[in-house]
Image (tube, rainbow, N blue to C red; front, side, top):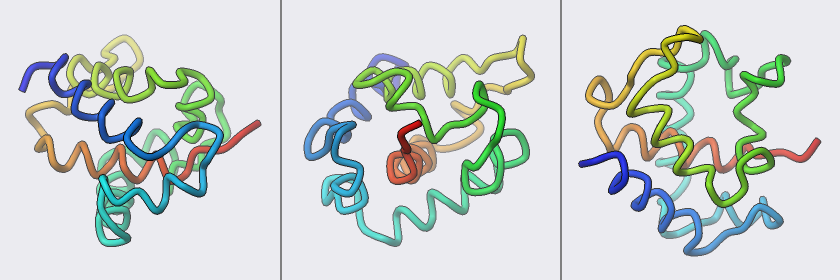
Length: 120
């Protein structure tokens, strides 16, 4: 799956039933799956991402705090996520996860991150 197709798939899943102004709706998004998908996404996040971005995405440093993706990038957040997974951020020490993790695992991680988005 190309980076653009990957971003498009995430974009559709995000915009189908939620907005940045409705964080409660994000946790109950039937397009993305139920509590089991979110729990698995959280587990995958903690296994692969938590060492830099903090356990359960709680990170005190603003650039690494993934609970503010929607605040920072708005509706572009899924595209930013897809690009970061596809290209990594080698200058910042972030590896390329596309190919190392399945598209489904990445989707579950994004689903989890959508449930923990916060306002400042």
